[in-house]
Image (cartoon, rainbow, N blue to C red; front, side, top):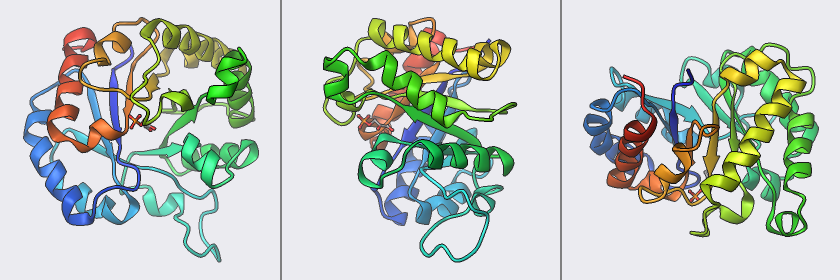
Length: 254
Ligand code: 13P
């Protein structure tokens, strides 16, 4: 059984005070919902304050990115060792990092390895752009992302994959549950070949892209989809709580 996971990616939103206020409002409501793993990924500067606000809560924290080196002269970067102990997860290879910060194959692979080495659980993002989708290249792009990101990854404890079609991110135009289930099935099959079958069978794979409280049930009711990576709707306490609640109703374990 795979425990459903709903992760909020706050992206470059919220000051420290706003982040603390957001989790202060969500915490009591989220703590009442069991059977779903709950995660928030605030900006780096808010991680400590958000973690402290969530002390004793079932809501976990993650980073939105990290560098692969452990320390040294890398001005402005954040090391996996700085995150280990502070949070449990790190989003890696998000399409916005690929698009605006030129992250690609080898760098993403090094980040996944560095996160695992530091004991962080990577949430590896893969997904096709609109023109790739329209050219019928979804399978090719997604398997390509996996092949390069998972080079030499043998026992990826806690690795999560998020399928985020780029055309669905922040557009209000979500994919359908059926389409995403097919692609996520392919992702699981590919991960099975690249790592091993048992790991792929037990690994959580999320859908991301314009997830809302209204459409989450369409995704988590699919057999291959284990939860959501939520952007915009994770910044609204009532929406995020409702997404977690719906996930529990559809898929939650008691
Ligand atoms: P939206 O939910 O705002 O479309 O963002 C999805 C996303 O990129 C999560 O990582």
